[in-house]
Length: 465
Image (cartoon, rainbow, N blue to C red):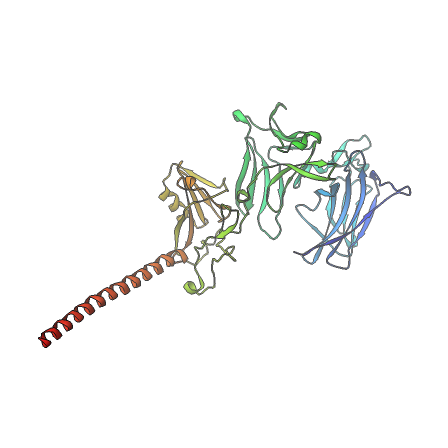
């Protein structure tokens, strides 16, 4: 993993206090470093009402040989919002933050090229400021908000922030085409793993009595769920008793694990601590193991060895523990002009943490397997004793279960016909036949050898007589 270092600056007045807002015409220029392992950051605005305080900064960060520039909000040392969360603005030599005379907040590169903007031209904007809640806002002369960062959630939800139904938090794992999301739905809030056209939930929280959700809000004592008449209908309480002395400060969706956590600030430790997390077991995380890997009861990863080996196909594809991520991706069985013979292989004692894909009810296990077999986009299927069949476009989130649970579930993986699974059985049969042949040959040899020895001894006795 490559490490990046930041050169940080704080822009101050003569008396050493950071500015609390930026007026029309404000402009700040941040140069791009010459060393591609070094980033630069400048803190421009600070709200000193609470500790740790909120700060507004500009960052230029090295990303795959290029430089990304973004406007960011920090709570202490934790980044809680970024203008480049969904779409990065790449620049060279210089990055400029400007609040134009017509009220548009912009990030610009060389020659005035605009890479990000608030879109508030002509709306009477007078200044940029950070509120005590951490909401970055553009306001007019009467203090009315014309643009706010709370309307563009990233992977963090701050104290006092609301998210309505159909809005979400998102986080993006490094070196992955998948991403996580926290979705607010009418009947529940849920965590999702998203990959291409596939969306799978792996955790949920529902209000009791089937009450509908209008919005959620992070309060001082936890995450609160509200109905359309603004009545609180449910709450996620922190599990750490220490939180009772400190309010919740933010909720975060981890970009590596996809876990959801609530954080409070510990003055004694001078850091943020998690007082609640949605998933407590490693194997309940959707990307605990690589594709075609199984998270075992001990928390380790083991490879599903069901793919062809080099000796069997000549392609060099194998499913060893070191490279079980080389599975067949979604749509891998749908290649035009190429007929792929496949078969379903059942894995005993495993399940998937993923739900929310195609679900068929009132079917048998055989029918469930056939549904996946006939669908070229399907790579695996999970069948439960409740006669529910889940169809998957990727083999991920697979975990081992206790023996008492294994009889209630059947996890089936689609593999090329004659692959490792089929050949394994074929080779086993060959070895059994060889072993039986050898044993039978030894028995026959011993029988005939013993009979010959008996006849020779008997003949010698007659000769001596």
